[in-house]
Length: 117
Length: 111
Image (spheres, rainbow over the protein chains, first blue to last red):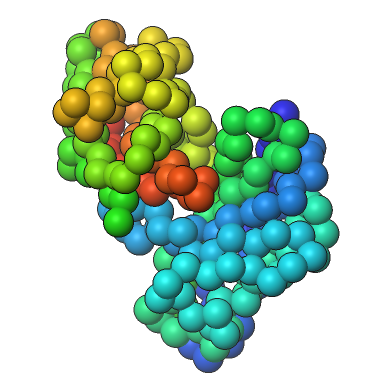
């Protein structure tokens, strides 16, 4: 159980365009989802926390107008990178928390590699 | 703020060798500590965890002990296998339930 998927797994877009990444909890309803960014050979950095039906909470230094997060249902959160630039190229990972899990574990998706040309 | 430091990789070992990956943390309060593993092409998976001082987490032959006095949570395995080749992340969960990760250590096990 507790499977999280991401789509697409890999995307290339041109500078100035927008790209949407989906994160789905497949076998549970996730009231809370998280978005991370991972640079090569570096740690995962939390970008934002999204709660179903409310606005996302962004970490300090993350541009909320550039990284739009929508958590419209209990099984789907989306991250839209608007007006992408080459410096936005990175590996984006989502995770989800199962509210039934009293240990507050996060279950991670496989990640999406974004390349902006 | 809270932070996690783990040894840089890659770590290259022969099969059946002993593994240690060092992890130390800085935190206010008493965080829970975790090791996650990321196999090629897959998402992070929880490997083991410890929620209080002196707790030992264990799974699949891996062990780590929460050492409050040295603020450490080193990962060990007595005999590694080729299938253990992956990237290992040490992490802590802070008081707001956010995960803070170390930079990851790539392990390569040769037959």
